[in-house]
Image 1 (cartoon, rainbow, N blue to C red):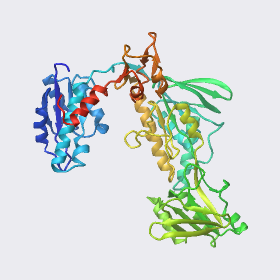
Image 2: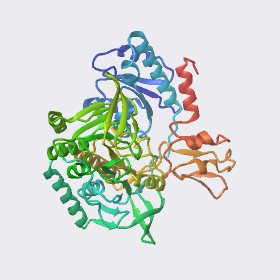
Image 3: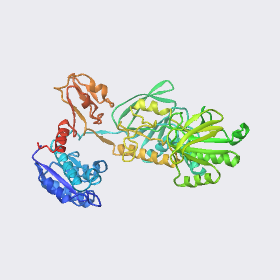
Image 4: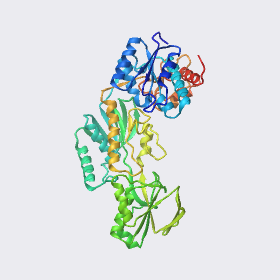
Amino acid sequence: MSDGGIGVFICSWGSGKDPKLDMDGLLSFASGIEGVALVKMIDRICSKPGQKEMIAAIKGSGTDRFVVVACSARTKRKLYRHIATSSGLHPLAFEVASVREQAAFVHEGPEAQRKAETLVRMAVEKVRLWVEPPFEEEMPALRNVAVLGDGLMAMAVANEIMAQGLTVDLVMSGGSPKGSPPYIFSNQDEMDRALRSMAEASSDPRMTTIKNASVLDFQGPPGDFGLVLDVAGEMVPLRCGAVVLAPEPRMELRTIDGSPAPSAQELIARGLRRIVILPSGASSGIGCSCMTPRGTLYALSLVDAAPGIEVSLMGREARAMDWMEGLQRLAQEKGIRFFRIDGEPKVEGHAPTVITWRDPLLGDMRLQADLLLLDTVLTPEVQSLAKAFDVPVDEKGELLSIDSRLRPGETVRKGVFAARFRVGNMLYEDMALEAGSVAARALEMLSMGTLEVGGAVAEVDQEKCSACLGCLRVCPYSAPMIGQAGKAEVRMELCQGCGACVALCPSRAIDIYCFSDSQIVAQSRAALGKVR
């Protein structure tokens, strides 16, 4: 630790609106921790006056690192970094004791106070061993985005990006944009607007369209990615600052054998009267998640065209928000039945098909159907994209996002964003919101023209490294390499600080700045009440 000492700043609202913590008691507790040079209560750190007061206190005291006792770092990290840099400190020279979420919100009375004190001591012990990481370097970022997709989702993302002055390379797997969008529209005007937006994006001079393309290789750091495309048998290089994966799902009502749902006239001609619609998951198998407006709209078209047809919709729950509530009410008034399923239904036979299931209230149920339809979502493009860009897929078959609420669209691969489709109701308005949020994340990354390099990245102790190549094999970002000295080195511009190489290294030659082994051990000892 340097001579500057540690500052501890306690937010007056760190306990929440209804205080469960003695914040003055925390102030007194922090003052007694060895090495703490400054302890100060700030009235709402996130407010402008609170920030100014904290910056002035840091400058006046000469502390070179600090602990914030307040809200979660997940929501306020950018604010704390701003305070650090405005105070003349390294942007990562701080630690957060999240007493609000981890103590006040989950404990009562003395237990909450003890937990808060432990969190403060753990944060102090961790920041005490903080070592300044390499962080000041910046690398230029290209101001174009590669959007992979050939449907309305990709076009919507491209429109949002081009509206902010960036250029787009649209990489399509086919020879033309997909026709009718698979999303559910509230009315015809909304669908017409969506089709017009596709046409406008296609003719925008800021967008270059690459057709019949697939990704052969993907390398490089965020801000300067290098793709190699197979375009109709020809290898074509492409450089871009960021990548947006925007696969277009195929969603439709299909029979069990995969054929499209018949029209009312076809049903009448075939003598099929009892129709059952089940929602299915990302695979072609039978599922039982949510009843969607797609099935309800189809059911209404049948009963309007052929009043003798009986239609039943089954699922765990019905999506009935906003205009969909009126749609479901209308369906019930016209005799369309809705059944709730608890668990997977059992389907047997063919014309008639017997469906048995368990209703949470009524118990075991049984229904016969002349025709069983599946509200199906098919996503054949996702697996190839996931493999090409090293982005995992979740259990629903969607490209995995780190945090859909706080960091929408971000994947484990920095600079690669995923416009995720929703397997549920797939409303057009939901898709538009998703496209806008993902475009905003890509724009945020590229808007400054430069990207920060370093921070919580791995570093190799050359003397301990045995050049076993384990880190090269395990790293999902291709950050480690063997340098001229024959030992492993980590390229900071590629490292994401995931820690996979640290966990694997048999020589314990790798550590991560801001999350070093010594810091974690010190935190653990503090949590157990052990003094250094």
